[in-house]
Length: 160
Image (cartoon, rainbow, N blue to C red; front, side, top):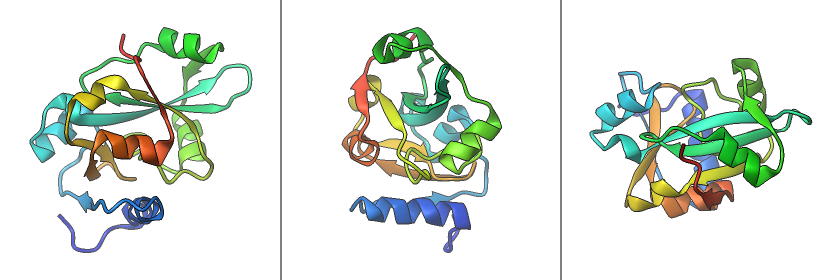
């Protein structure tokens, strides 16, 4: 863990404070790029890791953020049904453009513009969950309710 946060992790820390959330970003020496790596690094269940996945609405190229439990695979069909529009997985450039973060470090907040967000209802079975904080080795823990506050997301069934 670092005493001083890097630039991207610090921006997530500031975004958390901007939402009135007293949560702390930590940076680890090891990579937490994948949900498995993150769960091992903080010694929690895989399901407690929040995967922040970016999709794009096919017709408008509008970003959609899906925050999924680390143990779940996202059903694009369920997201499409809820939106009433088709979506596709976003490429790395699109993700960085719309979130400000690289894949593997996408935080659920602190984006240049608000992004419509879907929250995996399965995250609410845990008291504490962990999300990326701007880099592949930065994380923060929170309550599932905090995720809803910071994203203004829709809690729903997104599991395949």
